[in-house]
Length: 201
Image 1 (cartoon, one colour):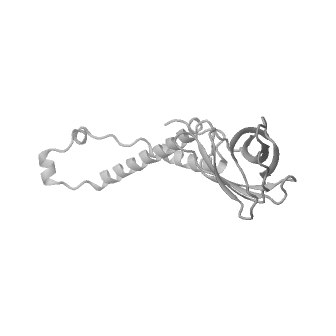
Image 2: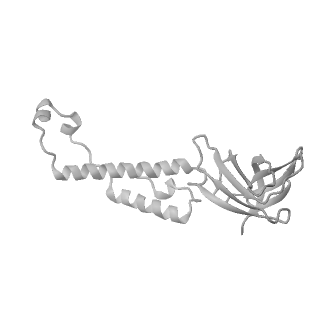
Image 3: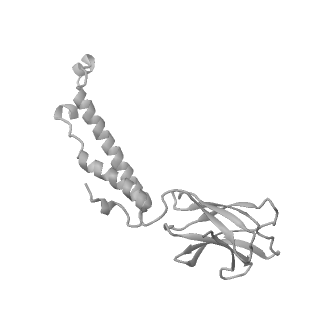
């Protein structure tokens, strides 16, 4: 059985790490599943099939315990494989508030679990973003270690009271402490513009 620290990345959050470590300890305590006897490994004979002897209670319990142990190992290994190299284990929602450039703006950015290709779909719901000129638009940027890291999608706003609801995408390996901002852009800009929405503190 591999050591727990060899299976789990160091940046897994404490609650999730504690839960997985408890599962790992149970697997270690349970030990490997019992090996099949040569008779069972050979399979049933015609006489065994016709007579249908009752399975001993102890053997049924042992097989059930082995099955549960295998399922638990598969869960732990699947979790590790799905999150190796950093990342978020499940969906989360980040609240955003307007800056001096859009003081009445509010938004919620929901980051969904990654798809099989490693893309992280996101949904932004926002109100209070003013309508920009014909060459203006808004951009969602991933922020890592306090700095603009990469774009995740652009959209426009009509400035209506109904607000906006757009689907975006982060085609990157996300890390637990990543955040996002929304900026005001002009077509042809080569860098991030003025931040109009940032994480609520």
